Image (tube, rainbow, N blue to C red; front, side, top):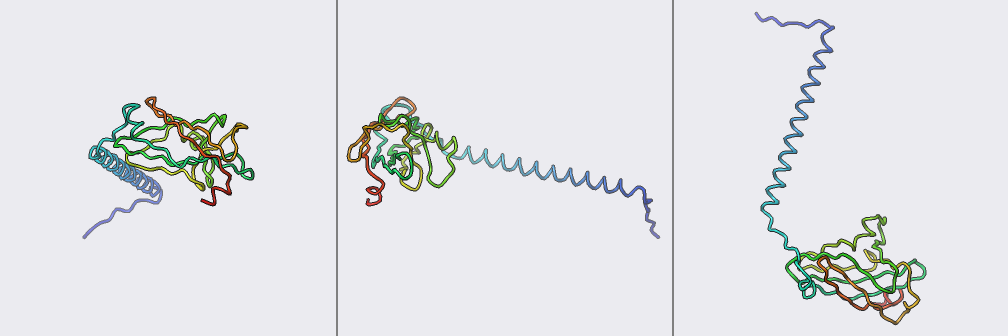
Length: 187
């Protein structure tokens, strides 16, 4: 014959308390295990990834980087002029863009047409990584640089110099064609 111990009614809350404590310990153990597994996997993946080569100087940027299709688009209905361009890194190292400027604008600020413009977006072109063997296109409908403090010298049909600066001291100066938004849609 088997006997079962019956707990009195007043001790049931302590049983529930014990169960809750065991459940909490189990949850903490499971979450800790998942965290350790995730961190371990990340470390293994990082160790298995090839190292990223970062440019070491001015000569690399001069030969590796090209900037094309540079246009300053004037659209009086939509606010400040927008600078669009295509930048290519033909090299095998990452290059870091640190600034874009032009005498035609007191400041150039990053923006995106369809997104909220945050401080990170505004400063995007002050710390932009250009991955090896990559082309980045900044075209209408996406990211661009907004021109604030527009110079009276900016006129449709002219071109203005635009300077791209890189960490390490290299610069690239290109000419931007000044066009209207209607001219841009025709292309």
